[in-house]
Image 1 (cartoon, rainbow, N blue to C red):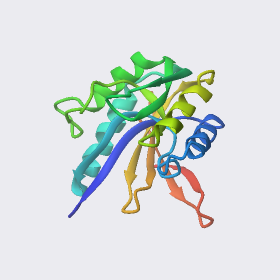
Image 2 (image 1 turned 90 degrees about the horizontal axis):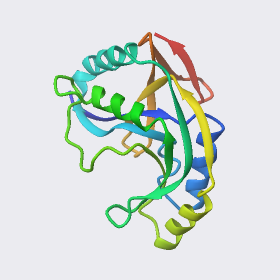
Image 3 (image 1 turned 30 degrees about the horizontal axis):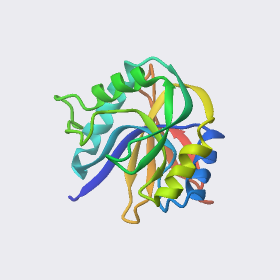
Length: 193
């Protein structure tokens, strides 16, 4: 068996997810349409493909122990000059995301890994593009606001084409996985497993 690159994140719901994805594309970020709008919980992690059932069981167990929590986005921030990223800030929900990512990456679990930088939940809107475009993203989204109740997280796999595709949602409280299965028309159809 080979390896796969996985990530775990909280999807930014519609209409906010599409709007921020289009804004990211408008700033000239070539990765905008390869990465669904999200708050990262476990960054890209390469794992042996045969560990996928163990990882899925771990995700279901973590989700079963979680309660929904509020997330509110408000304004922008940046990691520059350390990292070429502009993001929308979590004004509410950062503590919930932090607890969740710690559980997902716990030492005894299958997704244990060191982070390159300390965990800081955010929604990326520009990454690795020209400084002028980064400045524009920072300024144009400075008044951006969105809020929702987070009741699940999702497992994603990065394809050979660099596109991140959702494999499954994990609902809080039940841990019940909700798979994303492509329909004949190409749009995902949600089915429960």
